[in-house]
Length: 433
Image (cartoon, rainbow, N blue to C red; front, side, top):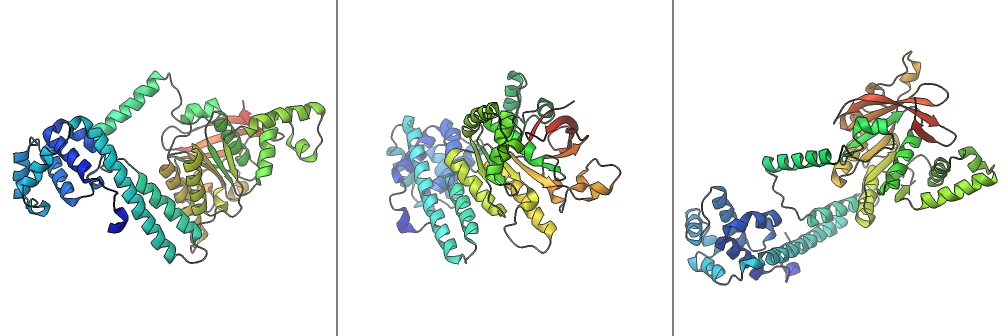
């Protein structure tokens, strides 16, 4: 609990009484009040006792008035805990200002409650900091972010009624119907793939897997470029390739100029003009690239939370799963990859954004006659398949760049495949045939 001295001034007895008096006088406003405030937002235990009884009476279909309220409090033995006097409730009602101002009182109570929770969270962080040993600073940062975030969530913590869930679901369905089939998720840039997936959806974890050289990074970067070009804030965590190389790839794909020429400087005048124009476009993209090597999963989460808090975040890419370090040591490599996979799924849900991660396939596929990948080919952990909402395989068809993108798992829809063409010179995918 919060230290008593630290919350001085961070509550309002008058506002809490005003809200209680208002709901007793006009029970029709109880749902709207409780939709904004939780009982725990009230500082005084006596006020929380009264509100719990009011909610119980309303839930039972009993009219909420002073006489019935006092009677119920007496029967449950809680009247004595709030002072034991009919005068207590009468005084609240007598001193209640106009119920027309109840929204203002609710806002004041909510603000005071948030301040108290932030104080309590700060005290927890201070205690945690005292326990942290050298080398565990990232754990402290992750703990601090989660505690502060939890302290500022203002929604009523009670679970929504099924009727409300159905109402919201139908509203979303109706919205999509009226939108003429607009994607519910973020577009990949490939119409055939978007038709299959419906775009990359918030809270979902997707895996793009393939053997080295099949274009995993290129496909991820192409998709990130498409999303950023549509105004989405994108974070790209690259544990294999330096940021400058990724930038060169972005410029090569945008300008349509051979990446090898860019890296060696073998450029014609019109090539340089194309790159200059592409530079202006790429520089404006809301795309954040982090190329820290050996990045642990808890540090990725910490940085993603910070990006979301500072500038907003709509999509996360991680290249690739097997290079991400676990936050703790495990006995086996499979356990380590499993922790990373679970954490990426949890991060997608926590930040309510799609997370797309690259993954390596094991070498067994190269020894088989049938080269088409299966879910069993995911390297080092079955947890990747289990945790993911979608798994895609890149399977080259010929040496000219024709590639089959196989949707091997799709939790929210159909599986299938689409053909893409991978132009390695400019590291860009386009629709194939």
